[in-house]
Amino acid sequence: MITLDHLTYNYRGGHTALSDISAEIPTGIHLLMGENGAGKTTLLHIIAGLRIAKPDTACTIDAVPASMRMPSILRRTFLVTDDMAFPYTTINEMVRRHACFYPGFDEHMLRDNLAQFEMTGHEPISRFSLGNRKKAFLAYALSLRTDILLLDEPANGLDINAKTILLKMLSRCVSEEQTVIISTHTVWDLQNLFEGVIVLRGSHLLISMPVWNVTRRLAFISDTTPRPDALYMTQSFGKFHSIVPNDGTLSTDIDYTMLYNALHSPEKDKIINALNTTQR
Image 1 (cartoon, rainbow, N blue to C red):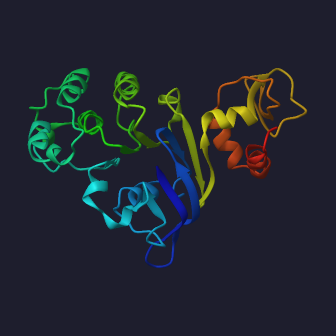
Image 2: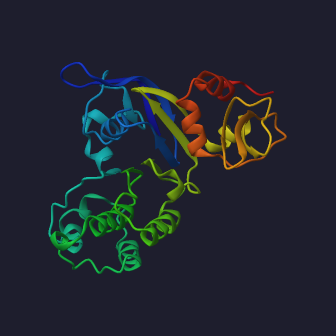
Image 3: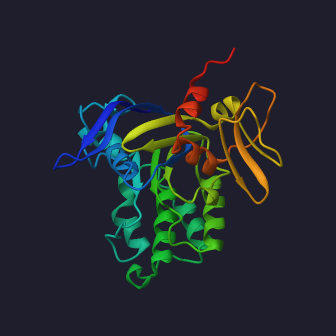
């Protein structure tokens, strides 16, 4: 369990990247959303132990502060950033020199993943395009089988086919015991995977909850006429797209883009209040 307890992080010069964030992030695949500069990457770095928040115990993994960078925690956590550089010449060399620090590493899974991307692990990473570099790193990261996997914009640089492969790969490789946090602006690429949603805005946490909890309280409706009970509504292509309170009789999929836009609109408080309402 990742626990954030009144977490705050300030950069030198006084800029506040994250302010008073509290949440519990259980196992499952979680979507992390927020505008540029909202603190998404900073939060992933803090969970990975690469930045130290205030207080030092503000981010813990199974009650152990991530800031302590204990080997017992580091071997359970892996972060893939959008601009990550390979420290070795090939994936196979990375396996020899790096994978030994991760007891859950599954070489059969790695070979499977690489084959899906039409790679062997022998290819020189320096000759890869940005997209192929990302494929190789994702194939490797998933095969480490860490308890916590943090992915910052994993679909960036991937073509349409590679995004489809990544979707299937995440579904196949991630177990029920793992916690995966995916920070992305292109939610439609992986939207069927998410079990939890975390939204940041201007360094503050707006929501952090399971998807089932969102759809239990809110319904996402498209209709030819406006909904009088809409908490948030937009119009496009001759239809009205609304978020309405769910009284338990409506069953809809979550529209992540609409939820994100609603939480960044003047109707934000209505949405948050509806999500925090205790249902009888």
